[in-house]
Image 1 (tube, rainbow, N blue to C red):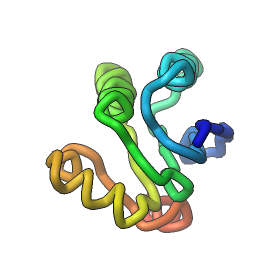
Image 2: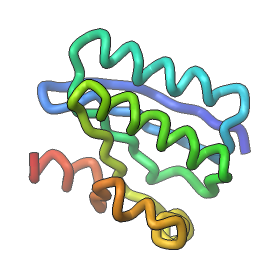
Image 3: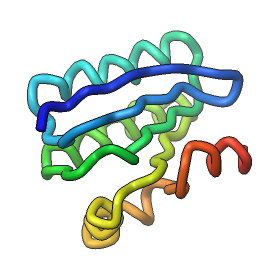
Image 4: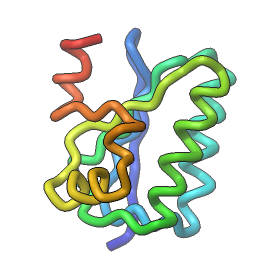
Length: 113
């Protein structure tokens, strides 16, 4: 399934809503560029909404880690929201659930920040 995405921002964060399979294909560099652009605009909080992501490959995991590294290098943070059960299991297996803060939904993130 092809990857699609939308971005938005509010006073709390920049948001990246992803639909499809996160496999780090040709869209990957564009997603990292979105994080870089947000950093240039002064962003410190970046939220990746995974509610419509069915599958993440090892390259997709690398993309998430690259985004996190870029944000942390400027004192920022990347949060993941609404992972499916499959994606949650992947985060646990790879121990990324210890590296990323994961919220049940975008609304849950907004309520706690």
